[in-house]
Length: 385
Image (cartoon, rainbow, N blue to C red):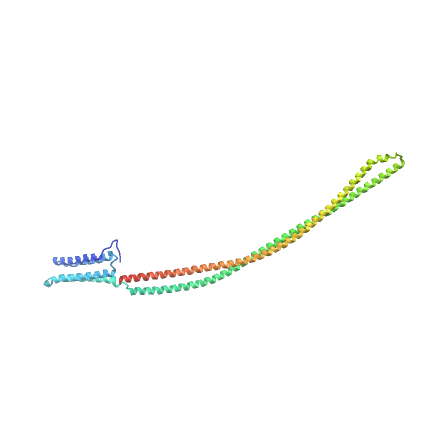
């Protein structure tokens, strides 16, 4: 039904149309004008009522009631025409043409009413047709929903197989990468510890060689000093012997007073005694320095030995640390693989939930659509009935 910008009450329009129809029928009888006042104008009024009612009637009047009003209006026009014709029965011989025109107008208006009623009511779908269509639509929707569920299940199975393959491939790649990283790390550790051991060994060898060289030089210096001291002492001893012999020979040929030698040799003998004491002190000091150098050399060798032992202990600790680090790396590799599998499983569960939610939403949408359609059909049929 088409709606205009404003609506008209069909009840008032119906009364106005009936009044106009009766008025023009009586006017045609009184004016003896059956074609214009008794035929043309009543049919135009009938057509105007039908056109205005179809286009501008309000929503309170459904199609079936409006069609009935058109049918009843044509029937009333027919009765009115019959009543007017009854007035011409005394003159039936001379007025038969006017009577037939009025009957023709009544029949045409009745035909208009029947056409409108058939057009608006007979081709309209009833409740049984609507319910049957709704049942067919529900069955089709359920079949489509079942097909969608089967397709979703097949896709889920395919996704599960693909996810399993992807998980296996990811785990294999992760294992290969972790093995490569572990091997590379182990090679670097072995190379580092080998270089460290070689450097420590070289440093220790250089230190021992330097200590050995220093010991040799110190021994040579001590030997040279001892030989020099011995030569000096021998030289001094030989000079003292020569001097003593010279003095003795000179004294044997010379006569001196009794206290002359005592007075004359007191100072030289004192100087000789001081020189001998100084030489003795120097020799003792040299011996003590040689003794201290030997002690320092001994302590240095002990320190080197202690450092060598500590270096060996440090190397043992480094090896232990490398083993611990290797164990920690293996544990970390296991944890990484477990975390990778757990992450893939969570992603798989999340995607599955998304697909199930999408299927449920599609099913809910289809069910809501079918329910709204059934409700609209039932409400329409209730209004019609």
